[in-house]
Length: 162
Ligand code: HEC
Ligand code: HEC
Image (tube, rainbow, N blue to C red; front, side, top):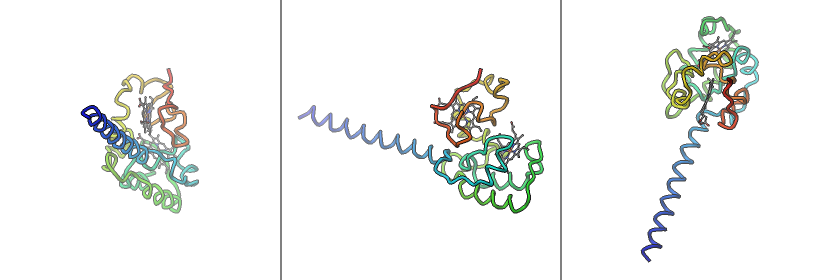
């Protein structure tokens, strides 16, 4: 009787832990993955020429808004677009922006790579790795995430270049 009771408790605990863990994994997935979001062709066309089209869930709406309204001074370059394109991209990005948990507050310089979630996800990447010639910059997601252009950051598709 005693043993059975203990195993029931253990089972209940394991189930609870599994539920909590899958809940967390789901929240993370939902937050960062673009796979479930219908892509906007205009965004792919205009914002994937110099780097990948960063998934909308990687920044809060405020950051996207500021970025779209300062394209002539875009991280040291000029990425200006016509007003209609800016408007279309801005509404799509802000509609699918990070809206819960860790990514809610705007990171410094509105950089994904300076967000709390980004630094936590990459805390095991040594500083020297970011500086490798084949990586160049943390913003260069596709250097390591081989399916970043498809919005897939799953661990299975990470290859760190030497
Ligand atoms: C002419 C080239 C060019 C175009 C076009 C361009 N960008 Fe960028 N973008 C850059 C450069 C350069 C950086 C800085 C990369 C670095 O620091 O290594 C950058 C950085 C970014 C970052 C910050 C990445 C980080 O470090 O976290 C975001 C977000 C971003 N761009 C969004 C956009 C959006 C949205 C568009 C389309 C409206 C766009 N970019 C179009 C050149 C471009
Ligand atoms: C130098 C290689 C490198 C670059 C560049 C890089 N990452 Fe990563 N990324 C990693 C590694 C390594 C991990 C940790 C995998 C693990 O052990 O969980 C990771 C983890 C992640 C995760 C969590 C994945 C998961 O399943 O838990 C996300 C999301 C992510 N990166 C997004 C990005 C984005 C967005 C960019 C570009 C702005 C980027 N990464 C740039 C190497 C890189």
